[in-house]
Length: 76
Image 1 (cartoon, rainbow, N blue to C red):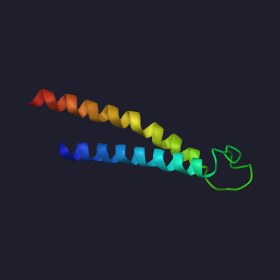
Image 2: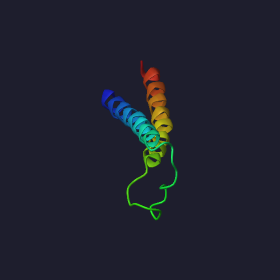
Image 3: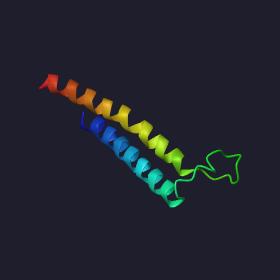
């Protein structure tokens, strides 16, 4: 049971880390959106991709943690 929580909390930490890294990377280029599309100038990943992936990872992970907690409270 605790291993399932560990995996979810690691995913939640990864989501927040990706969100923070994406936001800081985007701030580093002055919130520029000019190179979002790979066809623009260079073939490097834009920091907004990290931000989007991190924000997309947080809600489902939180939902899974709430579900595990709800199922676990019924067993006690």
